[in-house]
Image (cartoon, rainbow, N blue to C red; front, side, top):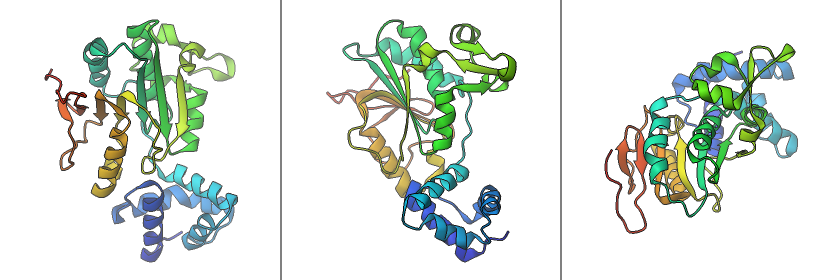
Length: 277
């Protein structure tokens, strides 16, 4: 099945408008590979016809558009990805936290949940009985279903520290052999919701820590600027924003201080910045 230039423009415009995804011409092959099987399953003869189907009015078209978004978005993650970020949380952020309120963390673009559960394991270990909460969000309903299920292949769990494996992970038996399930007690403190980073609610937050890793690379500069601006609205003064190691806020006007690789701190209410570590 082929995708001509006019059809590519239709999909570029659609995904940009709906989720801010910047699909360059170089992504044409990726678009074809991820949607062709769905078109075949539905008996749709062309990408133009499928575009008409997912942009039609009504709930059926809306559900199919969500399915297309689930297919086109990239969902690469693993437990304790970039361990230095979790080390900074344990050694620097948590010891300096404000204790007047529960420590709240948002894993934005959480994919299938590994990042959110990694954060939860660290918080459980360091804070003990002190209150904390983790929110995981993603635009993909398919990924959120996996996150809520909290069942993962063993090979995806290799970076989980041994003591966390013993405390928080249940080894699958019988038909679940080769898989790990997050413990129910940990899952109770992690909530997953569908959120579009380009259209966030006003009332979200406030959070003490936001992980916004490996998602800004899929946006153009105007969308990236808007996303960072609205995300920071939900970050407490003195809170931290964590990006992917290949990302930065260069070219964006923010009042954040870079305190470690891909980690930024929002100025406190008095305008004081954190000292560098």
